[in-house]
Length: 295
Image (cartoon, rainbow, N blue to C red; front, side, top):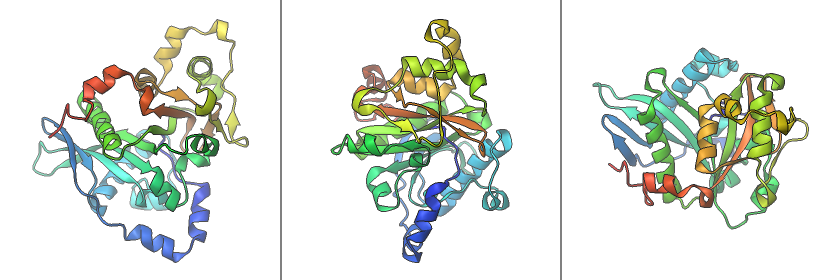
């Protein structure tokens, strides 16, 4: 999901875990470079080396800090890579273009499974949203956090997005994931300027019952900023970021309350997508066993 964040509150707790914890992060074994799919010269797979992860971080820096309004911390600015503590424990989904002699990473998503998060300090999303009750309400389900999504400027087309979605679906099937979730962002930090789409999401796409989750009280911004009878649904849908609109089409719901991230210049909402809620046409499109773009 399009959260493009720098890890904040949990860094301190991770550091307090001691040098053994940090050593374990720095010495994670390389992932199996499983090819999840192909379209022409484009391949989607997991990062297999630290070098590939660094290239994904460099792409994130280009998109978030140079093209958009994110303010990098000192380390990120010095290395010109978007870096946080979660990078060491996440899987990194990559779209790679093999059209030229030197393959180029042109898209990325960061994936964090619940079993890994439980071992290493929790999910990034917990720094903005109170997801504890959501996790506790589904003790038998496997959660997957999506984040740090971005695509290089020249590759923002259907093929790249299709491969990213295909890669996520293949990953979900591989690890028997039951629920996907994460922060999704609007550009800008003025809620009034986003009143129409935020209110539309509040009234039309809010998660209910045991799928509810709310922004942390100290960070929560109301989303019901205009009266429901005054909402122009067509204009509201047009004003949604493409990724949020895409998640709604698939079957996702939105948490209660938004969060302003001044460092990244965004207003964030929580997206919750149970696999069981995914519209059948999307499963048919990518294949029950993620075979549509299988290599």
